[in-house]
Length: 417
Image 1 (cartoon, rainbow, N blue to C red):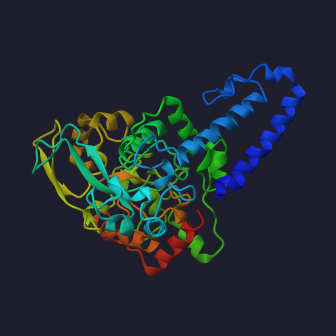
Image 2 (cartoon, rainbow, N blue to C red):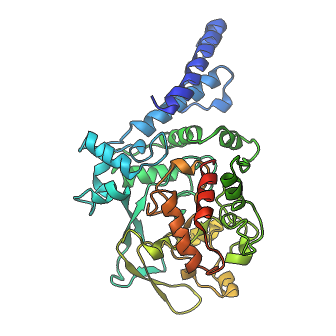
Image 3 (cartoon, rainbow, N blue to C red):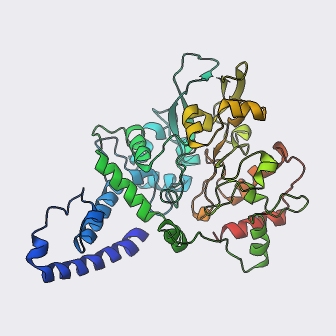
């Protein structure tokens, strides 16, 4: 039985018992209102105990839609790629599922190496093929008429994300959980039955109720106080914590180095000190840490031509250009990228943001490997190897170097989150 069934459903059963007793006590008063208890009931507009029954019914149906509903597609459900335990899946998960059932719906469509045959990529790296439209101003040099591009990406975990993170997907292309669910149902699930609005709402509600790594985050999502960094008990944990406190960047001190990008309640946004180091305003949620540039997994390279209103087209080569695959006007409207006239003041071009990706929350991260958009880091050791590269390749080249002890300290602290 999953953690959801073991904990949440026990509460549901208790609520049902209470509601049933109230139903018997209320007699005809409750019996006269059976209609509202349906999948499209609105608990806010119903009196107790009917509103409780409404919430339970919606949650149960949301779970069914997430775990079992295929919408007439290729056999996949939301839970095919977003497990109830971690919100994602690993190469080890893929191999175990292959051993258990070679016909598992994970191994169809975009899970196949070229979209038709082969399962080496998904079993080695747990990535799937994502086909995205090329936005206005971005084209392929070798195929100027192309309208789409396919990249290999991991499945972003939904742990702690639906209720607490305003940015969805690695490139913020979806604005709501309903949009995210619909895109997956269409693209990954190849649906033949169109989900209705209420079903998308129920899937979103289930995710918002289900995927928390600890009680502090659940209470924060309900309006409680923001979670604070654990103090740590061992010397390693306490030293590791210093990397994540909000502190000015002042080498050779390494205090606050990780917090430049991993700050805020969810440890997924830039802090006030990041501006002076990377030029990112406080609250920025996208960074380029050299994952596409390093391209550890050897994903196919593409040469892009990017146009803006500030000068001649800019050419760059990348396996995945990240955030710039999202419509520029949408990025500006969401505050993820400045408009061109601000870029001109900063002396930047739109291509400056190429290979930027969403900064993930660090809460629960010990349980949500692999890491980065391409799943190139299978564990904390490989994740920190990427930062070795970044500290050499970035604006702070030569100013920070992680020692073996630093890495052990950071890993010890990350395991507390």
